[in-house]
Image (cartoon, rainbow, N blue to C red; front, side, top):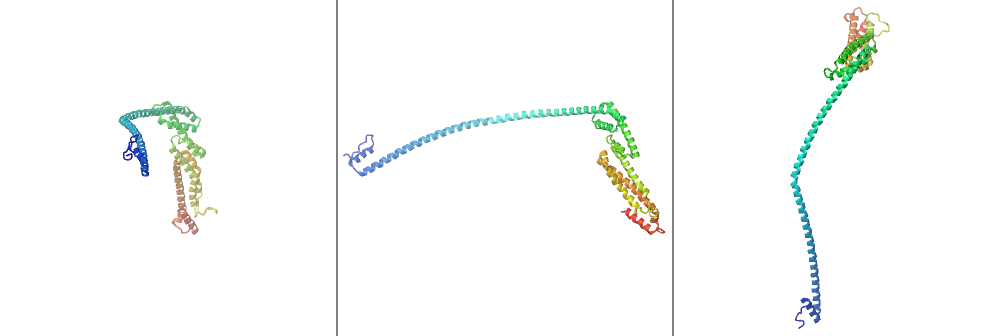
Length: 346
């Protein structure tokens, strides 16, 4: 009766009553079964604990997710507000840029006007300097001419010529008149002195006065006169050899005379050019410029051609008999003339 009627355990559980019944009967199989149920209950309790832990973890995760969602929602709301303000900010930036551009245009206009004013001030200062220089030149140029200090007078006139075009009309007419008169007087005096130096063959004086043509604006005239002087020098150097020319048929040659005097005279004329170039090139380039030296060289070549034609003409006249008739003339003389003719025509 005790086994067949299950009694409730004090806590109301049938399992405990069954366990008591088994213990009363003393069966081994029932003992094993009771132990299995206890293990199941322990596992069930452990599972319940794990479930509660998971529920707590889920609650934490849910709370964190809710917090994140709220934070992101606030961020998105703030970003939305900021996005709404972007067009207004862009319009404000455009207005600022337009204002800046207007200010920059105004400043650039002021800078341009200031630059123009500075340019006019600079021009005015230059005019003042030119006027002061003009007054100084007019005060001293006549004194320099009177004392024959032509170099200093030429410098004053050159300064006047360099600045006169920049002066406005009516600027210190008295000083301008004095300097123009001084320019004419100085030009006349230098021409006279230069011609006298050429006639006197005074190379130092020729070089001195030749340098003054360029400051007076007479560079071309100075080059022409200097070329004339050099051509005279070349002609005089060739004249002595020209006078010594004696034809082979005249029978008046000295024993030590050149076998081909006419060819030698032609060669000497061109050698004289080389000597003159070496002697005068530096002074001509310093006084008139390297470009004008070409004109001087061209004049020397023309003079050399003139002297060469004189030699050839004399050679032709002196040996006219050989060229027109060889009868009665020594064949050695004819051979010498023909040989010199070949040398001349090379």
